[in-house]
Length: 194
Image 1 (cartoon, helix red, strand yellow):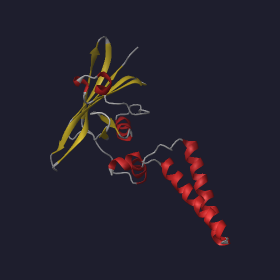
Image 2 (cartoon, helix red, strand yellow):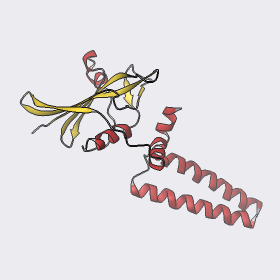
Image 3 (cartoon, rainbow, N blue to C red):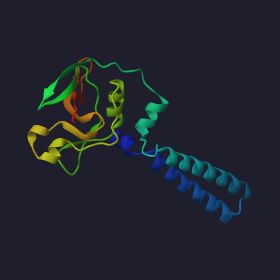
Image 4 (tube, rainbow, N blue to C red):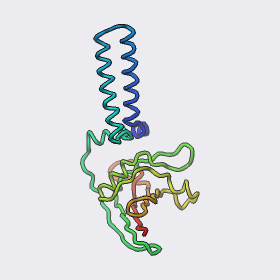
C-alpha cells in the first residue's frame, strides 16, 4: 500500500478523472439529459483547467504521499547530528553524521534486482532542506547495482549535485520506544570537486 501511495502521482489521478468525466459527458449527450450535460461539461472543464495548471507549474510528479504532507504537515522533525569536515584525495568534504533516531528513508526492493531503490525523493529533500542544503531532482539507483561491489551496498551517489558530489548512506535502524525497524540515513557526505 505504501508503494502505491508513493507512486500514484497527481498527473495520473487527474488523467483518470478527466477520462471518467468525459465518459459521463458522452453518456449524458447520448441520453439527451440537458441538466446532466451542463453539469458533466462543467466538471470536465474544471478538471481540464486543473490538469492544465498542474502541467504548467511542474507539480505533475507529486505523489499522494507528497500531497498529504503538503495538506497535513506533521510537527517539525528535529534531527540530532554532528558535522565532520576534512579532506579526501585532496578534496574537501563535509560529513553529516546522524544520531538515533535517524531520519527515515523511503526505499523499496527493486523487483528486478536484489538492491533497494529510492521510492520517493521527498524524504531526502525534506532532510536536505532541514540541513539547508540544495535538494535533488531525481532518485538514483543503489551504488552496488552500478558497481557490482558488495562494499557499495547501502550507498546512493549523485555526481551532479550543486555543491559537488552527494553520498547518502542508509542503515537499518530500530526505534527503541517501539518494536519497529526502518531504513534510515546514517551519513550524508558532500565532497567538493573543483
